[in-house]
Length: 111
Image 1 (spheres, rainbow, N blue to C red):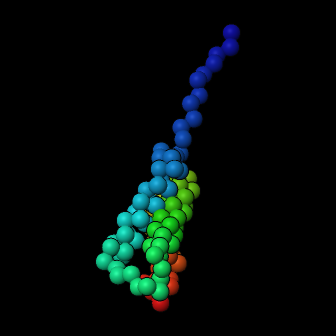
Image 2: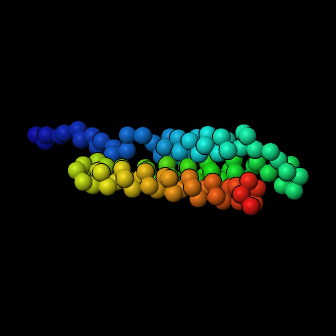
Image 3: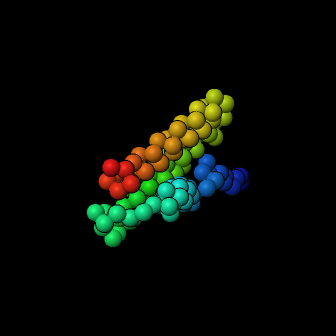
């Protein structure tokens, strides 16, 4: 007689990649919207000048969500690796949003 066991592999990733990327993009969209709400359009920028920052910053936030997803393996190990992974994720998110804002607003609000 053969004994069989049902092995269920638990996923390290409790939240899917798409949810993390959407959350990162949503935070980026909210942040850039705060910059754009009070701005005044100049004729030299054209009619659709807001499209560039509204695309670039959420893309940067989504990229930071991807980094967050990839760091799950280290966070699951616990200890100093978890602390390092959290610190790296926070720094990477801040840098990604900063670069997205600079690339999105270059030539319009920031000349």
